[in-house]
Image (cartoon, rainbow, N blue to C red; front, side):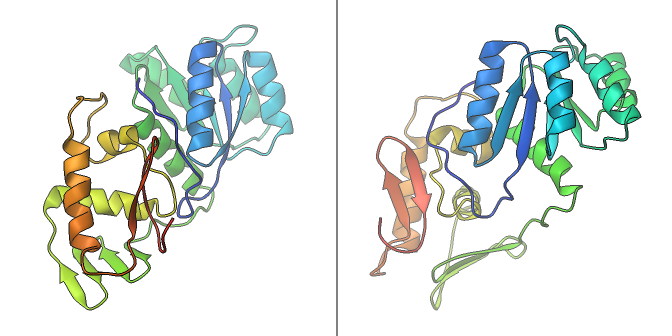
Length: 241
C-alpha cells in the first residue's frame, strides 16, 4: 500500500467518526493516519476486549474490524454488539478472504467485508457507503467552485460564460479535484481515483494533465482556481492562495 501525506478535511464529504479495531500496529497506524488525513476522526483499539469497550462507550459512525484479534476475535465482538442491539455499521477487514470466510463474517453481523490486501481508496468508499445508511448526504451531481461549474450527468463544464471542452481523463481529474474543493489532493489520491493505479509509475503523467487542465480552466481569467501546493499536491478553490 502506498500513501502520501497532505490530506485535508473535505468540505463536500460528511465527517465521520470511526473506530479501527486492529492488532497489527503498522496497519492500524496506516489506517488511522489515512482516515484522519481524509478529514475524519479515527480511534484505535488493539484487541477485541478494548474494541468492544470503545464500541459500546463511543458514538461511532462505522467500525472497521479485523477478524483475528487477541483476547476476543472480531466475529465474537460483532456478535456481542448485535445481541445488545448495537446497529453501528461494521466493515470487516481481514486476511481471511475466501467465500466461506466472507459469508461467515456477514452472517455474524458484519455489513461489509473487504479482504486484505486492499486499496485505501476502496476502503474509504465502502466506509462512506455504510455511513450514508445512517442518513448521510446524497452525492452531489453538480460541483461549483467560484464561476467554474461541472455537471457530472451531462459532462458539461462551464467557467463564466465559456463552455470548456475536456478530454475524458481531464474531466475525471477536474471532477475529483472539484469534489475535494478546498482540500489538498495528493499524487496518491489522483493515481488511485483518476488513473486507477495503486502504485506510483514514476512518470510525469499527473503533471502533464494538471498543466493541460490549468490552461483550459484558468487561461484568460484573472483569478486562478487550480493551485499547486508545494511538496503536498494540488488544490482547486476560489481565490488565490
